Amino acid sequence: MAEITDPENTIIMTLKDGEVVIQLLPDVAPKHSERMKALARAGAYDNVVFHRVIDGFMAQTGDVANGNAEKDFNLRRAGTGGSDMPDLPAEFSKLPHARGTLGAARSQNPNSANSQFFINFKDNDFLNGQYTVYGRVISGMEFVDKITRGEPAPNPDRMISVKVAADV
Image 1 (cartoon, rainbow, N blue to C red):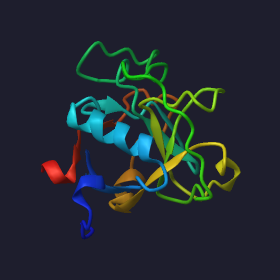
Image 2: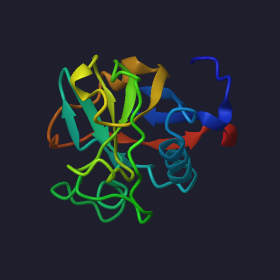
Image 3: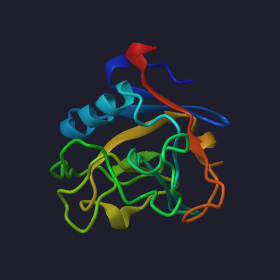
Image 4: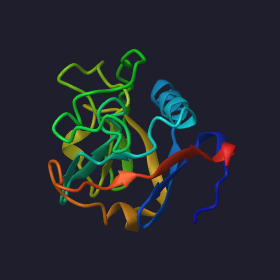
């Protein structure tokens, strides 16, 4: 596991194959970073599936309304919801959508990000300036690479738990 230098802005995501450590970027996207921490602290991301995983592109998750495999789960609706908090304004930056970065998933409206996010499997420069980058995987990317592919996968992988490192 990577050395955690800022536990308050570090997320530990447990997947079936191991722990993924994500450094949030509050200096770049403060609202998105705070939202992820709030949802993690509420346990909202626990058991939420990866509902859209495209080989050579990205793995998307975070639908806390419809994606929890343990609570009111509906695979067909996974990916259509968010949290009960208001949508977030875009926090675009010059940071590229490089391998291992976290991007805020949203609808056509740039200010519609809520709880869903994706982790880039590779550099996806065509997303630059269109989606908020607010974190990067600092260890465990090999576990992200093992997430089951599909849109959705018939038996999707899930985030077993998502915690703020300061709370662990």
